[in-house]
Image (cartoon, rainbow, N blue to C red):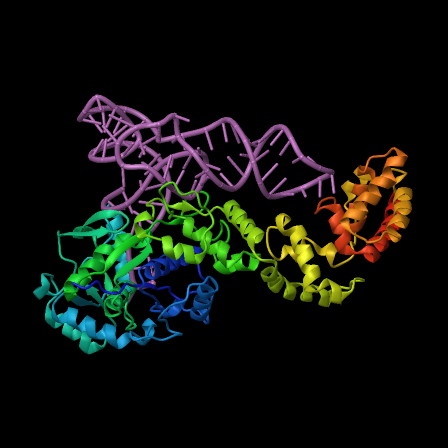
Length: 502
RNA sequence: GGCCCCAUCGACUAGUGGUUAGGUCAUCACCCUUUCAAGGUGGUAGCACGGGUUCGAAUCCCGUUGGGGUCACCA
């Protein structure tokens, strides 16, 4: 037998944002398909009309593409197995449903939701497991409903659903690629609704039909689907189809180990994008939640390409994994440390432009938006920022004058002599040539030594007047980048404001 | 509650019968240092429990406990 081309899919419902758990599911499907030189497909499961959200489909696909996950077939890119949106495939489900009806593997049910609810409460009260009571199971299928009754309801045009007839007391078994053999007893399974009264299929029905027709070889999905496996398997059996291989992924967890949810933090990929995480970081991080290379590898940072090369379903773990933001932050820092300055410049330029459009600066806009200036700032700040946008926000003194001085730092570093020393040193800086980190450092030491002082008495105040804060990059390099004019201006401004405070 | 899944440091994990149980994040200490980072060195910290199997169990089996998922005309 010739090995068939691997086909995997991510099948979200368009109810809003992309969940990070969804991203990981999509990623694993993508990685596996690409590793196997196969295809990754996106299908939209919009069979619940009431939950459908405008634009959600497009956002889902856009967000996946942001992460580098591009589908070979999707509603937006087309393909040979379309349509890729379930609401456009209703005639297909109808057709297959008819087949089940004919084969007596499914039946009409006219029970109203009130009736169902009543029945459920009754069973609960009696201490029984709530289950459909098979009121409308026809006589010829082993039930108690005469066919005349069913025909009568049909003729009256009463709304109905179609349920699958789950065989009694048989065992349903399959081999999960991650979990190994899993077995269920059919007596614990309800007669699942396949077609809703609005004519739309339920998830269980539509996904089985589509997974078969679209010829997927591997279904990789979240563990929350494991309990519905027997229903799906039974459907494959009813149709005489060979089921694809299944892999149920461990869940992503909140810090309290419950299923990752809103309320306990951000779950939308868009939230993390907004905060400034890069796609490389998010993809890397989410990939490592439940998968690792194994065999004593100590690598932590992976590119999408590397993940494709190294991924395997065999190395996906079984236990749920907590989404830990601290490690995510560490990864983002690793990413920033290694990203070429030119790339960072490209992403921060628009941010800087936006800042400049709403804030005045005495600095030369031409200079501070130049590549060479930005590169200097980046190299000085690279190891001190957590996100790329912080090159602009966290280092704003490279672009704007400090508006205030860190109170605590001033208290700690100012003495009655400080302003005088700053004034004197300022005149040294005025004639310094060239104005560089080396010459500034040398000048400062020469200035301080004859006076019997330590460099620190000037270093700290200089940092504060130049940046407004007590922390930051190497002082001398910072002053060099800022330039003589700005430094002199800031010293004199600082002397004025801080002496007034004392 | 029924059914199903799961169980190594606080978190992510390596480990597939013989290891001083390893790595990363976080944390603590020290070093470096004008600050903040980064970096370096070292430390604290784990096999849920109880039975087996075996010369030998984190590793295999059973049970207990614990956690999670799921029980819709939602996916």
